[in-house]
Image (tube, rainbow, N blue to C red):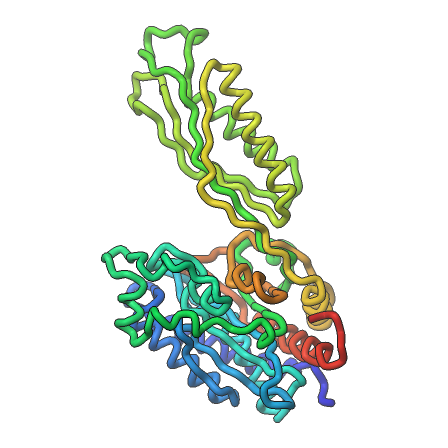
Length: 427
């Protein structure tokens, strides 16, 4: 059995190719002024074709599935073996960076390229997927690519329009896809053993720890609410301070409480008041009504619910004390997605092997792994990203970090494939 550790020399060559290929994909954009590549666009087809070429050069059989994901398969020691699935997404937000999503697909290809160059087959097949839509930029629906693979598309999605009134079904037809065959993209649970995703960290934790790599424990759950304080508008010059029912003053008090109370909880919990609107909105009128939003996130649903309950109870208390009314309406909820413990352990061992120690951290952003976890165990490896900047052209990774990432990722893949062959419970 050949060693399961990619050499530093090979890893650096792989990282150089990954960086060059990220640059090449960044040129496939609907606008020359910034990277924008959305679902069911001509640019998506061009990116899929380019990625398929790279997959084929690495010894993979390729196909585009019924929802537009680009897929590749590298057979195991026995044809038809179940697969360890690697991947990420190829779509972007508008005016995007060049590493979010793409880095994971290209790193997975280099892992297979390394096996192919050594003429090595594993007990599991290796498959790679470049998901067509994770960001939801065009249609306002996220995870269309990965939910195609899991067979969990709601029927209503095909009639959802983009900003120009073109529905998903119409856009699929324009690209030669058939909305009536979306179900063909779904994979049987027995086809896949687990899903692994390498991704840039969209936060500053690795940089603060001076580490290139970290292992994700969970993808944060989230709750989003529209909230409001309703008091009484009045003349700014004639209503005494003791008689006021100032909705903005109440909201300000609560916003500060949200910040303070969340910081006093588990450090992995975050809460944000992102919008604020005052009515009637005049310089000489006491605000009679304030509308605001609350976004609360965390890697454990129980802790998230406790924090949310505390914040809402305090808002009610502030309103009662000030003679106002408070209301809140939750309009978005997604559960936290735990990464598989066995996959975490395999990734930790691999990371420790290449950088000496490993860091466990949650993901505050969503990923395709959320959808995949509904069917299969999932694991994620983060690569340091300068200042945590993402969804912006300033996304930046170091080639040396990418080399370490490919080393660790390929080692974990080999370990997991061998473990599956010998009955390990890691996958």
